[in-house]
Image (cartoon, rainbow, N blue to C red; front, side, top):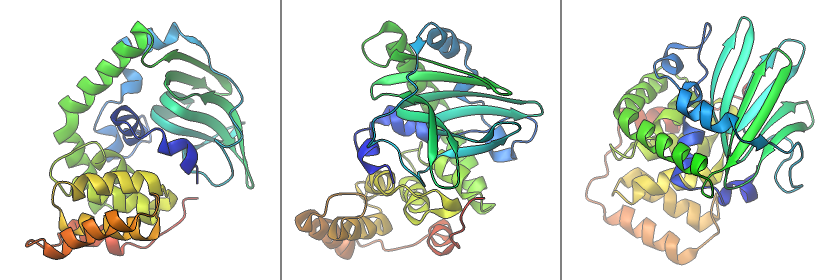
Amino acid sequence: MRQAAFCGALGLATIFALAAIEPAGAQANPASHAISPLATNPDVLRLLRAGDACPDKAPAKFYGPGLGGITWNVPDLGRLSAYSSTCAVTTSPFAMRCIITGPGSVSLKAAADDQILFYVPPDFTALFEAEGAKMNCVMVPAKKSSAGRRINKLIDQYTKSRANEMYGVGVSALRSHDFLDAGSYLAIKFEPMDSGYLAGTIFDRGLDGYQNKPLAAYLIGRSASQGYFPAQRRLGEMYRDGIGVAADPQTANFWLHAAKSNPNKAHSALDQLVETAQVNARP
């Protein structure tokens, strides 16, 4: 797991970008298709297309085999993966457009390893476009350029305006056992307070084959801080055992005590669904 790279990228903009993974187009599922992704926003595209070329190499610590990413089978190309991105994809013919928040990447996935095609450093935002086997990636500084600041503002506006709809789509996907879509959408919404726990448990357990313990700890912590009992208990366990966070007995005791003394220990049916669902690897 790419913990070293992700731990430095737990800001809200990165969570929003990671959470809005939205394959769209002719063969997209209904949950994904319900919300138009940022990758089709004309203002975002215009600002990013004026950027500089993305590097084609990443630091050695950034990437390794078996890392989480959203993967598509592309004719004449192989398994194309995008990490830390929001994407719009059509399949007949294949076309793909992704907005990637650094640190992120596009790669070709092989059985034993991943071959980096483009790397997006921390504090950069990039646009990756592919049509068939033709690919291009350009990026802008996320904070030190007017384009990057404008894009961040558009991301904030988008997520705030669509948060309730995204939560509804996430719950619908969860009930359909489409766990990756569910986790993606539920991660965006701060309320109800179970949203972070639901999304975090999906990434904690690796449902649909995508496991990210640091992201899980962040999302579960969000619900724990709102007083949600299942999240408080799990966050205490994560700090106790060093799962997704550095082991910290004092913090672990705080959250375990908060869970024990919480007067509302109810579990929802949605909680039970993500806690008991079978863990299956994605093909």
